[in-house]
Amino acid sequence: MKTASARSSLLTTGRLLVLCAATLLSVGPLVYMVLVSLAENAYLLRNPLDIFAGALSFENYREVWSEGEIPRYFLNSLVVACVTTALVLLLGSMMAYALARFEFPGRKVIMGLILLQLMVPVIMLLIPQFLLARDLHLLNTRAGLILFYVGGNLAFITFLLVGFFRGIPRELDEAMHLDGAGSIRRYWSLILPLSRPALATGAIFAFLGAWDEYVWAVTIINEPGLRTLPVGIALFSGAHITNWGLTFAASVIALIPVLVVFLIFQRQFVSGITSGALKS
Image (cartoon, rainbow, N blue to C red; front, side, top):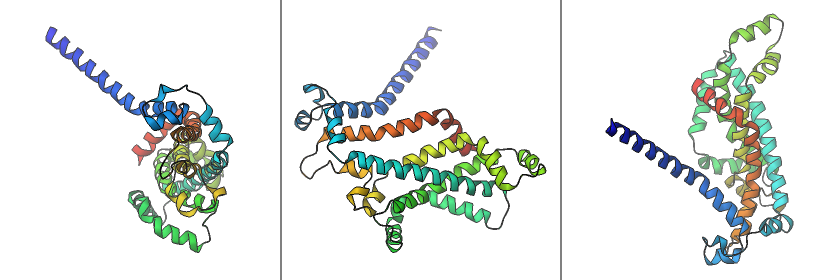
């Protein structure tokens, strides 16, 4: 009995150590980023770990917000991310509704293409998409960014919503159909209200996909007034010296909308992604 009890205690201790290590690896970089954003750059250049050598203050935040272009970059990213999220949810839910509820020629082919897009690395499509954006005169425009982000997120959101929509009983559709409701009314008044967890999950993924995207933004945007926040933060890194305090302060500012969006939808996030994934 003592051997079994000692083994159980040792197993519990091991689990706690693993849990503590995982927590440290997850939260540690975030805590370090916040501390560096409050430290003086002169000490950081001498030793990146010498955070507490000087007094901690919000001077980096004041400087990065009042003397730089961060507010403009922040607004550009917010507009692009919000419009992208709204369009992705609207188009993705309409596509998912058609694929989940109606039988029509080519339905399986469309689902296959959606799965294929999920498997293709985004970087492989960068040059063809750049040439397409150039020919459509979308370079240096917010529309170019939004259309690319909508296209990049649409396959995943549609795939997620198809699985969730299939879980909604068809008897509800049939009852509304007998009451004279058309397909658009059933989609708007029945399917969407019942799919809030999946829509909340899709909103988080779409917003994050547009908010922190860097490669496409730096590829097609050369106009300083149209730069997004990730591109603006990267400008703090110089060829010979980097102001780490300002860089990390801007990174913390960029993190705030992500946390707000996640806190708004956190209750429905887990149930939405698990339902959509399992039912697909």
